[in-house]
Length: 416
Ligand SMILES: *Cc1c(COP(=O)(O)O)cnc(C)c1O
Image (cartoon, rainbow, N blue to C red; front, side, top):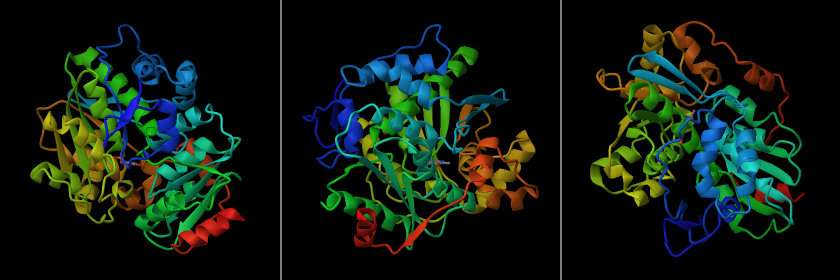
């Protein structure tokens, strides 16, 4: 299979090239040229087997085709759990990876792919992060030969534990606290790409515009929808805490290839750009608002272009928005109702279905609550237990360079 872009059906490039480029040179986003029909997985039950059956057509003809199974085994080397909360409510826990958010799937998959594509120059992965992406990418690429990672994050406005996770890595990861906003960080990454100053490196982006982060996310929708369907005979309805809508895009793609998925709800925080799009039919990017669910503080969701292109938004799908006070109330009520502790992002998902008692939902838990102890502990009045993987990271020393929001300054440091 080859890939075209949201701007042109004429483009036709192999998967590896999409992974290396991130953003296509015509300014569009890479999308599969065709969506193969995959009815089901027969007797397959393990996530690795299902992933291989699902993604083989997407890798067909590419230099990575023969490595797909190894790539999957390396990236899905931690559990995914589907927990039944009531007879019509499931929780899909995606936070059991090394940095405790669902971003580990995409980051590890991308790293496992890139390390198998030969390079003449050392590769530099540039990441602007507002929360969880940076840690997942650093973890996935740490110690990888010929690869270095440059992380940019806003000095203020991320949780203390997220900050620790952005700054506790080995010598091939450099972390910069930018004295500015997330928008500044993104601009600096773009400007660094556009400049010709870092010619001795091959520059790559690992933000969720990179299709290498979306493909692996289809796998857990395939796995979970098969479980739900096998058990209940019903197609799954997913509630997806959303920001850049990369995770939701993977779900729409999984539905498009024929898996048993019915309704797709994107649960946002107070940032309502996509909800406005559903109402008006026109996309108007907005300035991002800061919320308690900070990894979803996105005003210009980059993957919306892929969803609009697919026309799938016209089929069973919806959005919801949850303001901060409701996030807090939901963390408490979910604890009282189901006895579980959820992160602020996952709370947006639960809040969106609180009046839907008759429907059957699978809510995604996108991050471990212990990453957001500063928000959750005052609400619940007790401390959140730290998983072993997070404990290990928190005991590592940190190193960080603080810089003004200037691309010139960044480039001059990187050249030294
Ligand atoms: C990134 C992130 C999201 C949003 O995912 P998108 O793919 O950007 O929509 C939701 N929850 C958590 C915890 C995240 O880290």
